[in-house]
Image: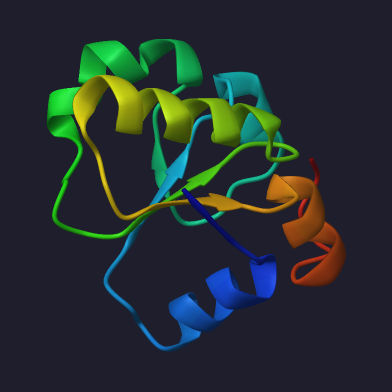
Length: 104
């Protein structure tokens, strides 16, 4: 399991890298502030795991990073996912350091 910073995430967006940003926040959290991502609430991951592309790097995002860490561990342990990363600080860090227009 690895971590990426919000600066690294933003650089990936700017360089048009081919990755999946998986936002696991609840619907009401996403409505408050959205980053270009695939949204699957944490509680739905097991039901939708087959819809996730295992070939691309996947960065997992939540509000602060704690749920992302649990989800990365869950995907790696139970489904054999590799090439996963936690976005350190989550949307809170992204809003503070990259896009101050986001509400989190």
